[in-house]
Length: 282
Picture 1 (cartoon, helix red, strand yellow):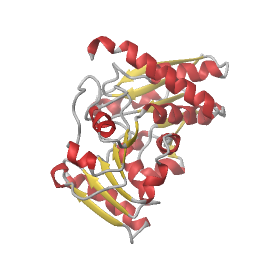
Picture 2 (cartoon, helix red, strand yellow):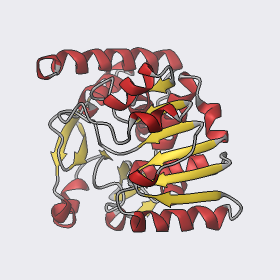
Picture 3 (cartoon, one colour):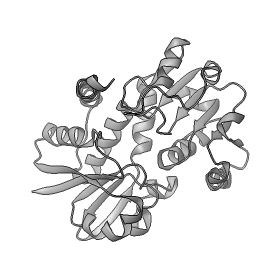
Picture 4 (cartoon, one colour):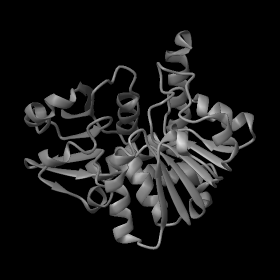
């Protein structure tokens, strides 16, 4: 039986096994998909174990640090400087980034993709944040990146400016966010289960944004999205992005294509599983 997994530091509440197993079932495939927790300082020593799988997905905090341990990178991984999917064939491990596909598909399904052509506020610039920054920079009029440590965002800004030197780009900490934006993109884990009830920014910042996208999928309504709904903003949570990027991984692994309806149905199913599994903790 073929073996796949998701790697990350803390995966107790991950939905990846459920989603990927359902995707395999949808196409009549048999495979084992498991969880492999790896601490940041263990990645190097455990990279050899990863090559025993047929492929794997990557989440926080390994999307960037996994790169030196891969045989080669697809153009998507090179473009975003982060990897979330690895395919292994004949001992060769190739890194891809399917997050952008999932991200853009999620924005489109909520009718907020056009907001990327305006003024964009991005929270965080880790693996997913880098991808969002690059995709926003292809379309936006201005990009503000808010991070706890502005120094960490400078390499991302330099990478973007090397491709689009005319872009208005600003780096700030969270207290320095000012102005109005067409869309707010949250790539931070603030508000993620089990630390629900927290928002990475104040309600005033949310009021100054026309639309909000939160990459978090557990809970379905984060505090950030609650504030967005309260203030009548267009919004989208992270589950559609998670399912769509997972479907793209299966296209890489097996060449399988999933329809919009299949992805939508699985997104709804996965969200119900999240709600039922963690209902007692909310």
